[in-house]
Length: 545
Image 1 (cartoon, rainbow, N blue to C red):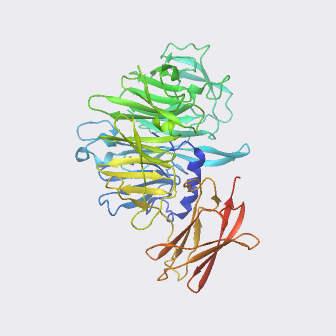
Image 2: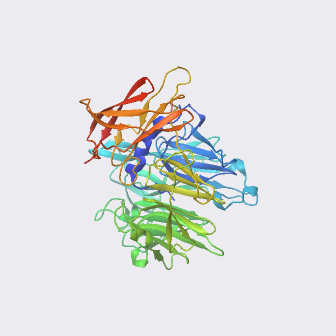
Image 3: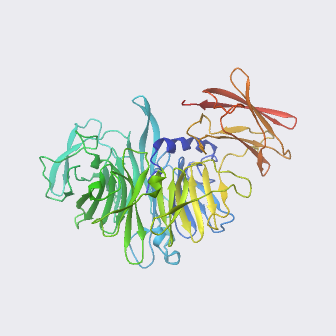
């Protein structure tokens, strides 16, 4: 699902600040460590490899030895810049010639060098007086990530008329020209046959044939808000037009947000329900349109994913009753959309659900307040607490964006790194990345703080407080203090009780002064006292209150 992950785009973009603390990037290749601590999506690859979409780009982890995982950043000029709102992986096995989800392909039968990876990109750009999401294109690899191809975000030429002609199913009708990448972000992706499909909000539902030497984008019509179906060759070309803006001029159902494909069937979620599409032999698509009038839990459908049961596939949808982000119901169908049922407990707990993952016996929900687990029906949910790990590492995030299971193990993506457990949450390993505080080429200490700038209400939020980390090389010294001064050089707080790993120290600050009040906007000077030595760094605090 993609579900970015996270459909609070602000949360996604904020994680990109952490990418400054990954290892130096090369032109093309693989670097050690992940590109960002904001883990948006996790997808199974071949054998023991899992691909990870982050707020700073694409990486992967090798879990051949779960106690000693190896993490890498993929660096390639053909990858989209920025964070990854969606990332999918597809595998082949030696009995089939078509791609399918890697999670249901037997590892022993998997053709490792034919893994398909698809990823989209997003950055923040200042427009119309505020920061807005901007799509940066789609990349795909059909050889396990060894080589990549790139498609720019789909837009019409700047000089286009307001409406242009769209040919579909032997008919021609009007389509609004989308000439900007702003708010045109591929939040979800799907592979079906030789086509890669994208749901890009302002860009609507589009696809391209990835096997072509020069692929071309194609706009796909969906029913208008008041239509319960749309069939190839039978469209009223006078009344029908494509317009993904707000009514009354446009249609919520043309704002495509999520997608799932299963053989010749597409499921597309929009701001006006779910559209079930049957792909014809000529690749034209007939649609049936479902809304809350048909039993969906809400109008906005921000995620669609399958649960493989004994003899059928249950289709789940994450549905929001109002404009996101908001608490919402889970909805599912067992009969291909004829009837829909809802599960309301997570909504009643005022939780935003970002992602679902299904194992043989359980359902896992990544939510705005942590990781939840249910039996296979989704009737009752319990929270899985991500504990401090055995090295003292702390996960500073109430939000969980993604989760995937492997046997008895779980990989959990948060805004503050990756959490791993191999005993169903009894113990955890918390993994984050930053540049080492000790410069290997010089005998000098690096004293740094991240995220910087620190958005005090939005970053590393745990139990209502944002947090920053101070990182420094401690050598053999096992004590340290940090004094924080405002611009007038008046001390606002003193921090102690550092946490040490491999001669590197870490002290966490919740953005409050000695009286327990949040500090105000401004530049703060931070003094580290380590033994007989003193070091300084600066921190910018942004307080929205």
